[in-house]
Image 1: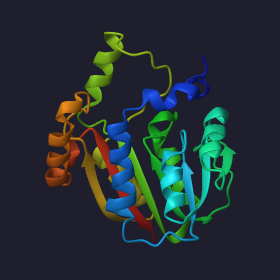
Image 2: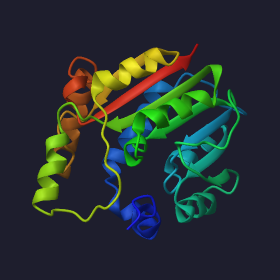
Image 3: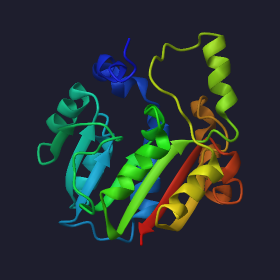
Length: 228
């Protein structure tokens, strides 16, 4: 199967496949921790890799004018069904169909790892961001927890056929800086995997206290910056 077409095959089950604790935590990080003090009303915002539109929904609630892009047509369709005011576009993060300096805000949460070249995707997201605009990216952290993916593959614990190109913690930070992004916040999410729901309250408390000091060892990276 073409790995890029895999996401279309799981579109109808996408929400049930996702871990909602993790998803809601990433929504909280982007819209509360990163953008909580920003007025998004009438600002243009790209949701790069929109999935079924949960991040799009939050951005619209904040007043943003949202463009929701995904490589899977069915996911774009589901997003627009949930969020009729959003503009849905089928497209790849590696070749965004927008001119340079187009959006006031760009968000992309746990999407770049599902491309053949995550850093090339980041470069495209930066390209379409206006100078002075803000970018929010989350991605699984290759620096520490990637071994869990390899174990799951060997033991056949899940049926996943898409790309899984996690990014190293310092690699992403240095790449953003090198590509004209002034870092505002760079931290981790989830000190340990969110597989046992009963432990999620403890995980949340630990994350709130150690997200910067232990970020390199956390499951996800969360980056927030401004384009110079």
